[in-house]
Length: 500
Image (cartoon, rainbow, N blue to C red):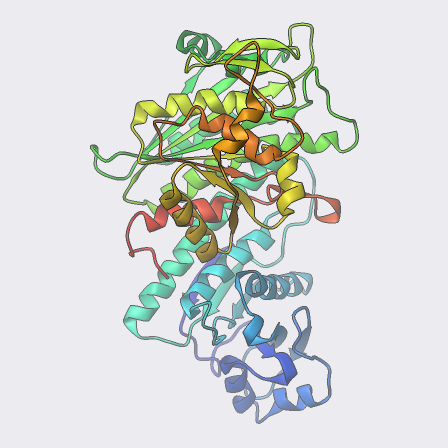
């Protein structure tokens, strides 16, 4: 979809449809007031009939509105201004986009970035509208013949034509377009079936991005190279699969050569059967989403390259398939990690931490400013936080605060959980330096405590995305989160130049 921002004369413009907002209790937005004036109160008359209330989810298509040269006007409910936030605004835009597509409208003008709200600037509304349009335009393209969305191009109307403000509005569209591409990249990778999106497939995709962007260099380590590095923990997970593991390293050089990079590590378990500690059969198909951490950091790298951020970023993806087999790791096995620490594997279904720990040790070679790992790590996080925020744990409060702030700014939120030493005792083992599980209590925290033992030299944070990486039910599919959060965090490391 082509999306642009323009200052448009609503009276003279010719368009298939102009989208304007109606607030709670039949109040009109500024653009709606303008069109009401041009049509001699036609919109007000419609509202008096009660055909649309202004609640979020309402919409009404009008044809041949007097005083306009555009064929249609779509009224969409915007709810109460006091309740407007990132999520509700994107819902408003998504509702408008869906209605336009259902009407088979290919091109439209959307004038919704004029809601006067202290939480969201008008330029931020432009960014969120762009993101929402790309999200709603996404169709899984891999294997299913599905009708493409009708809407092909959108002009976002922006009334403030002052050069400085319009410059910000154009930047907002640029960011929204980049986020749309990165997030939909993550969704596509996540939605692919496990027999297609294997570690080898992920590695090939990474090399394709390498060819698309001049500042990106991708290296793929094979099993023998991982063995030489001593990644015994990671390799133990792959033993039961006929699909070889891959270790993907993507290096983006947007800053100065001497600048220390930010490192993103994504869990890439392309299918998780649980191994010998096999999972129940119900909903096991959803374990193709166990590589959504990898998908999200790879999607973020696409966004970083699209925006040409002036920093250095490294993306590390340890990728395996966790399967039961005669060669698979067994409960009670002891493995040696790249760090030299030994691990008693009490549960082979706690495999994500076993591949991440070696990736975190490997990240030390880059002398990073900060390392953020992203993983669908624990079902306990879903129980604790549900499907709204990611779980956040960190060994540095300043880094945690930066990530929390990025989540708030982008609308892709996280919630911090404690990483206290009190929990470390749950990982004690009689036969190794640590066990890979800590019992039923505080499962998300003990998983992070395990990872923390491999990050003592790092400024590190962990995002558990088990609750936010995909949706079930009728809307089943990968969400592409937390690409917005990670991108916002990286943009904020560039100063204020990406602030909208």
